[in-house]
Image 1 (cartoon, rainbow, N blue to C red):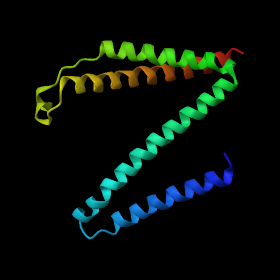
Image 2 (image 1 turned 90 degrees about the vertical axis):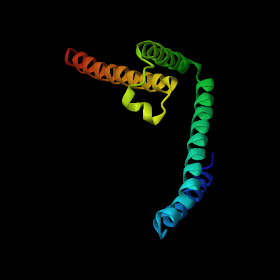
Image 3 (image 1 turned 30 degrees about the vertical axis):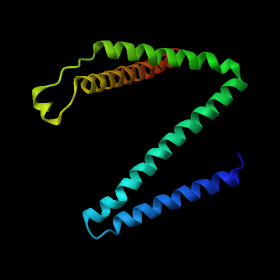
Image 4 (image 1 turned 135 degrees about the vertical axis):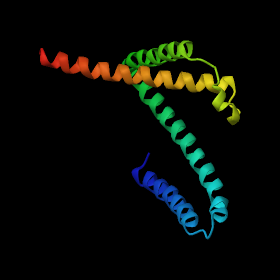
Amino acid sequence: MNEKILKLIVAILSAIGIYYIVRIMGADSDEAAGVFAGPVLEYTKYLVILTAVVTLVFSMITLIGNPKKLVPVAIGVGVLFVVYLISNGMSSDAVIKSYSKYEISSTQSGWVGTGLIAFYWLAGLAIATAVFSEIAKAFK
């Protein structure tokens, strides 16, 4: 993509964001600020979705152009899938009584548990990889 076009798109999106921030910060009351908070959240949601789609599309284009890079990507996706399966198996869908007033379902509790356990596994793997890498460098 042409660099000038990309800079123009970034400038337009930034201007929209600055407009919303100024309107929220300049609001007279919390109620007036809430009127602008909704569009800001929608704007952010659509930008996140657009960014994810653009990232995936350009990543796929790059990978299709260089098939040798597909092997490490497939291994990474496989590891993430295994971590998800382990995390899902370890998580519980029990809702603690003190949280029942928030109307949390057992499905939501299970998803949160899976996410937390997956985070712990991935953090542990990252730390173990860093330690192993440093030890391997010491013996070279």
